[in-house]
Length: 440
Ligand SMILES: *[C@@H]1O[C@H](CO)[C@@H](O)[C@H](O)[C@H]1NC(C)=O
Ligand SMILES: *[C@@H]1O[C@H](CO)[C@@H](O)[C@H](O)[C@H]1NC(C)=O
Ligand SMILES: *[C@@H]1O[C@H](CO)[C@@H](O)[C@H](O)[C@H]1NC(C)=O
Image (cartoon, rainbow, N blue to C red):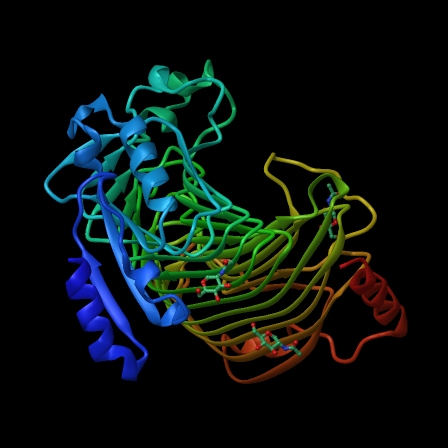
């Protein structure tokens, strides 16, 4: 192997490229590529495989294989180009684990088989209910494969079974303080709660994945982003019981495109500003996507009493089908039946809804901006929304437009959207939004 590598390296040195794949089992061998190609740096891509089977995994879907997964991760993390292999045709029962970096180099988690969470709530350790598979400080990580990450969350969704355990329900896969992470091709299903969460992370790519849970499973967000930036989510299919993608405070430069969303609650920013907290979200682009059979489509929601600023958000070219409320800004968000109005609000400035086309089942547009701070620079262009049921269905509501300033541009259907926005804005709003801007 060694000689082969040296030989190949001589052949390829001209191209400054060496791709060597060594298939090794367990910890016995290391790639020699780094040693032999010192000086060629990143152009030398070498991978070393660590198959979970070589670490003694039982792979029967019942025995606890968590320690085997952690051992394979640690081994892969110690080399450059380590690959953790979860082979196809096998099921691995994994209890909550933390796969921690930083690692020597790029790590790949190749999931071709199935990872199963404990199905009985009682077999989760009560000291760690926040997440199931937790990646921490994992930089330069790719998760890929034809396999499935199955949270088996149905017992958690049952309020009677989960009540006496805790209010906290685990997120299936969570990334904390991780940079340059790609998740692609896999299926993530039936999480107890959120499926895929990025927290304090940046440089995230999610591509060609499936996220699936029943439409009536509570709080099962597809992808949840908080305090994260430089995120691209694309070519994926997300259908759950809550938001397909949820963007929380501290997020900026998020690009979502070619997503199919539904069932669920659409693509949402917020709820922001809960308990008078600061919220800052900026530079969000959601485009070229389909949202079907959901409660909401493109939505921004904030609580009364918060502070901060949401700015530069675009929803463009979104095909909606049978969505109750396709376009929503709700600054009176409340998860109980009634919340008191309070002074102060997260300001909203620069939101564009462009080419939102299709059918709605309750109300075409709902812009409920705060009494104190109006929404400004709202753009509504090419909105074409028709009722999905028979015309004049009894549950249909007229548009609601409250305290929003900006511009409209046709075609607009229903034509009442022409009168949704107030023109211009007053100086006091500029003052408020610039002070919010300073906070953020
Ligand atoms: C990831 O790897 C690339 C290429 O080696 C490197 O440039 C980048 O700094 C790494 N990112 C992190 C967060 O370590
Ligand atoms: C608005 O956000 C988009 C990306 O979401 C970005 O490309 C653009 O530069 C931002 N515009 C401003 C004025 O910051
Ligand atoms: C809060 O303000 C809105 C808008 O003015 C109003 O419609 C709503 O009834 C108020 N809610 C309460 C609880 O006072």
